[in-house]
Length: 257
Image (cartoon, rainbow, N blue to C red; front, side):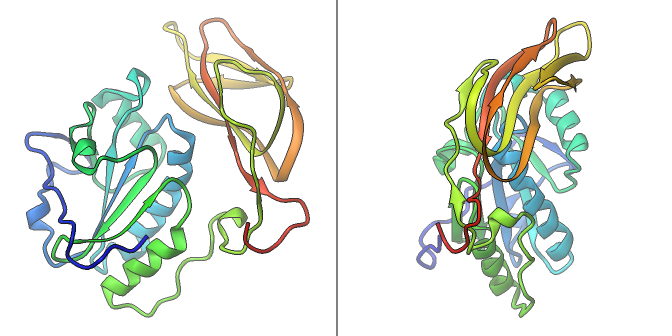
């Protein structure tokens, strides 16, 4: 969503603060370059899906001047702490700077409502565009290209359902714990945590998934939105914090939802 010009300035990064992939960043030292800030949580499935766009934009536009900054704001103790966040950053292939906002102090500056949340600032640190939740990828990239003065074409959607013309089917609401039952979705994710004695396991519809780190796991993927039966059987020590259902393409559909 576009923002009226020069109405909302970028809050300065907190000092002192813990960072990953960089010693420290200061917002006042980013003058002259657009800055894209995204709040995320490695245990939030929507955040993990959105990260693929952040990584692509960093790779494509970093040398042209774009500064991508992730702000890791945890929803719970599951994803809190420098060691856990650092391990997740490596596992997910995140190479851009990440501010570890364990107590949500920087989040409070933005009053961010949830995950993911994206804010694009211009070269003078004024907000020009923001998105709350998944989606809006093409609009964000068009705003990036405008700030960079580039006439390049935005990336093709990384997933078919991210296309502006995709018709999506609403999924089953997210469920707490090791939920089993009938669902409708394009993908099924779960937030999992291994036990204290090492890797655990989760049997998903008869197939075993190794649980060797805390975080969001994709359990099932369908080409289009599908109604099916989910059966979860956690192994000893494995904790299933919740099950998340992502929207999928409507069968045989096209056009905007």
